[in-house]
Length: 192
Image (cartoon, rainbow, N blue to C red; front, side, top):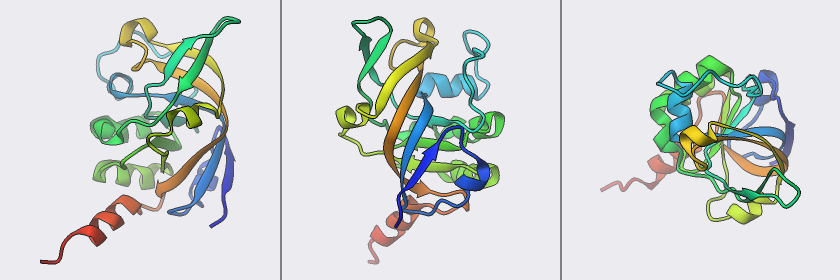
């Protein structure tokens, strides 16, 4: 299957053409978001209004708590950026997709039924990144543009705005409501 090069912000019509199992290379801005960020974005109690720099419409949320260190020239540098288990975001993900027009999620392990339905309804996809390859994935991060809620949530839970080039992932839940995770689970169930 052909690898698709995508650049953020993503357009719904492009996302809806992506197929299960299709490799993608993402370039542009992606935002990390774990449990605290998802709870806040979904309307839970939060520390402050969203910063204007967070442009989530057409954006990409990466389920990741990156390892970020001060850069010698100032700012930040990402040394590891592996995916975290996405299932933890299931209680919040459908609402976040609806509220913000996010077009892609990146993580590992897939997500549940509510997210599967929300991806189809709102024209978004779930992309799997390779677990255990945190340093390799960090090499696709060109720079850290900003960080939000660092003091409030702490480094792993903060929302890091990352500029990436050719970040590799695979479509495992598409915008038509198909899930490779569901297909593999059904195939793997014992028949006895």
